[in-house]
Length: 250
Image 1: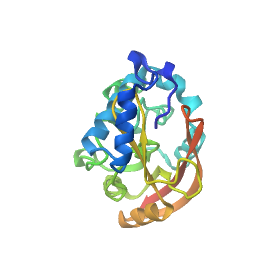
Image 2 (image 1 turned 120 degrees about the vertical axis):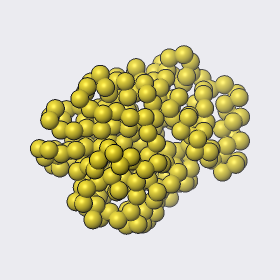
Image 3 (image 1 turned 135 degrees about the vertical axis):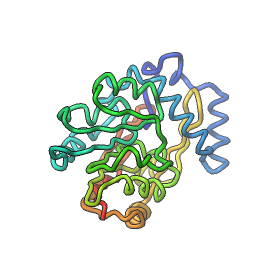
Image 4 (image 1 turned 30 degrees about the horizontal axis):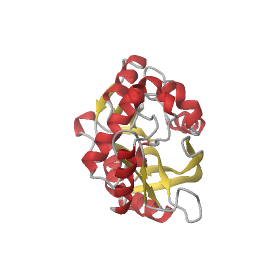
């Protein structure tokens, strides 16, 4: 998720957007609003790497979901659980879990993962793209999270299949997508190019029907759904709304 205030970015990232970036964003929109997957992931890695040191301090101002994640974990994490946190950032979601719980986190940014390792040295933290399968030698998981990170996902059915394959039968997954909704400002198009002072990055939005179909095709059972705030795009003073899905592997 993007939309950080300028002062959050060291080295100038997030400062007033230069004309070359505005031109690139306009060209991106004309081209359909997408960049290649490799360019997208490189852009996400660069942006989050540059704000890693400030991210934790910014978290309360930007995000609207920590209580919801905490309730989910409290309900499903039992002794002996194995938890996968996809797009884990600095590991905030799993930081409060008992040290006996096995935690594996993935992210594109090594800078974010370094913070997660410092906070929870007993966890396993890997640079990994969710567009690729979860390595089988990581084992299977009883619980998984993918909170906020699927904002950058260009193939939701594929990614949900990867996450389903990583779960034990009966394993629980809480994930979010930016939900496309007619009439909701900033949520009407399937893609939304984002202006940064660095690389081009695109948000991907999915309708309820598209997400429900991807859940079913992945062999997952929907348990709960909510349409609720996700994060605040500070540069636009706009709240971005998530579809919140709690699902279970068949």
